[in-house]
Amino acid sequence: MYKIVRNILLIVIWISLFITSKGSSYVVIGDKFSDISLERRVYDSLKEHNLASRIINIDSLRYKDKVVVGITFFYGLFYTQDREKIHQDLITYSTSLSKVVFCSFPYVTELDLSGVYRDSNRIEDSYKEPTFTASIYRKDFESLFREDQSLSLLLDKTGRVWYSDALLKLDLSSLKKESYIEENSNRKVDTSRKNLWVILRNLWLTYRKVRTGGTYKNTIWRGNPHLKEISITFDDGPRPVYMPIILDILNRYSVKATFFLVGKRVKLYPYFAKDIIENGHTIGNHTMHHLNLTTLSYDKKYKEILEAQDIIYSTTGERCRYFRPPGGDYDKDIEEILKKHSIYLVLWTKKLGDYLIPQSKGKLLLERVKRELIPGAIIIFHIGSRSTIDILPQFIDYARREGYKIVPLEKLIEDAR
Image 1 (tube, rainbow, N blue to C red):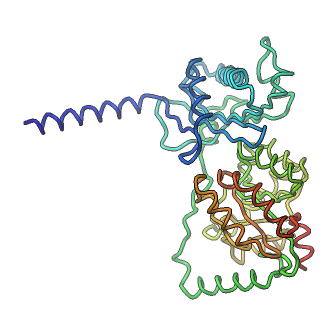
Image 2: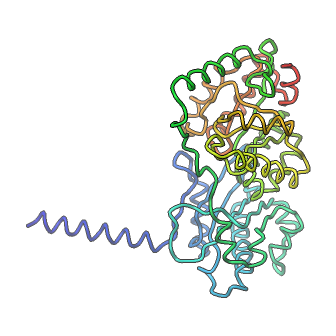
Image 3: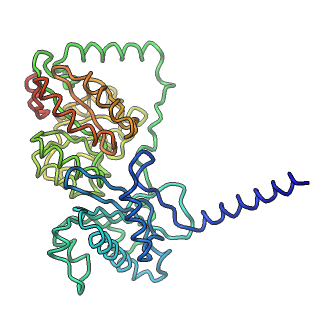
């Protein structure tokens, strides 16, 4: 009898917790490997001001005196039933978030906001794409913002804001469509097309090209194996919070890198793409939606590459000369498309898997990248990896102590010919 009563009580408690969780806002503070102290304090401060119910995620990164906080939140019909007030509600809420963060945390130097449209009380299984983003510097907030004006005026002055066309037009059906996440939707490799012989042959060809270095047709895996110079590349950007910190580290060390950007993310965060160019770095094409290109038809491959090419050019004024396929997956169709448009195919000397290494094991990543420090190496990091942020300054110091020059990708390719 005791066991039956106990089990019933446990079931009731579990159901209560389940219902409570379904009816409340859900929050992810940083990631499961990070020090959450700043994120938690930001969340608690927002909660004190009755601003926490819309929060999806709070993230933060720090390097020396640069501290960036990122907040992703909901807006939309769930918060106001007046269609005409949706945009105003978004700006009012963003203004309140900005005031609390900058006034409560005087050492925060930048706030990155991402607004996700939500049209019902149902909690989504996965996050939607934002239809509003902004990046606010403390200096701009303090010098330009006034209590009697909307935050949108400040954002328009700085140019560090993006509104989707559907949001500006208050086209609710298009807002829902634009919120759909296509990125990575087919990343599972289609192994049915590949037999063991093809896999082994490709591995051998890649090994041989990495070992010998130099350019091969319109492709490079490694630069000149006889020169102590390397290039650093970053994939999967731009991303809020991470981009400002990476650029700050590179600028402090006077290192020029190449960023392979996803076209959809350039659309969402255009100001970060412009920051890359303004700081003297190079932008490469990483497709429009970070899909496995080898599973697509020729026309879809073409569209994934060229659509990203166009949006990067329209955003930054720079045409990409380099392309890196997500996961390194490419075929003859892709080689043909790139050759037709005079775009170089850039791979890497060896994959580090930094996105799989938690921040708590950053030393493992540092040792791994040290082992891959060879003449002509093309180093690949990923934007969104905390372990990469932690070890990047140490790796740059180590490479220079070992006598290596960190050169732009253009020079590495030129010296490899």
